[in-house]
Length: 111
Length: 113
Image 1 (cartoon, chains in turn orange, blue):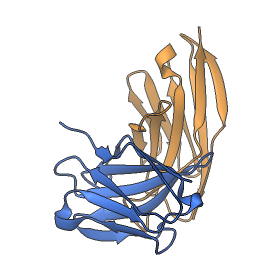
Image 2 (tube, rainbow over the protein chains, first blue to last red; image 1 turned 60 degrees about the vertical axis):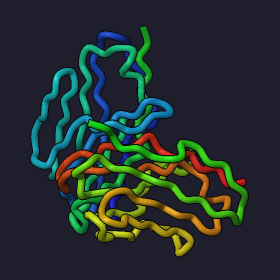
Image 3 (tube, rainbow over the protein chains, first blue to last red; image 1 turned 120 degrees about the vertical axis):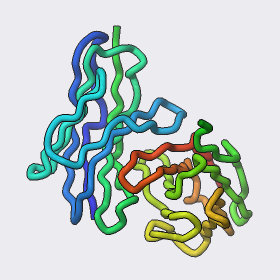
Image 4 (cartoon, rainbow over the protein chains, first blue to last red; image 1 turned 135 degrees about the vertical axis):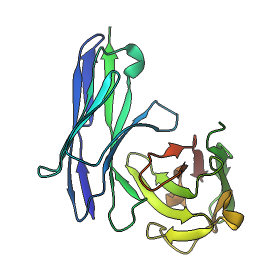
């Protein structure tokens, strides 16, 4: 099975940089996803890492270290609209489509 | 393109009744998933369709839950009879390939009273 840990809550200031960590212990691994979920809305796909290293997409970057079972999502130039829950999800290697989600990190961006 | 559509958005039913949730995935997405978020807990996998076939239904809690995807297009998830612990938000998601991120629907908030 999969065990995924991420901080419950984080607070940051508009314009700043924030790093949301995710650690996982898995019986199999086929990639790690980050999703953003605003309150009352559907999660939306942000990024995908399957190999070690950094993937950059505009203000958002995601990093993966498979040997350490560790990933982080980096958000730069924070905006108020970035206040949301950020979900880390690990893809299974027994069923390539299935993902196991962490509880999510609620990020609050303050002016 | 149209996104993933779920119906209804909210449902309140009494314990023992039946409810059917519907999901219309993005056209052309062979992979369709059902997930559930119970209050205060993480999003949990229920099952995965590839076209009309069940690829993995290991997350279905018990035989009160029945999912179908006739013709490989839309899917339904029926709960019969509903119990109090079935309350939660049921998300449907689709993806074109296994390696793609999911596109989620807005979810169905089910409340069993």
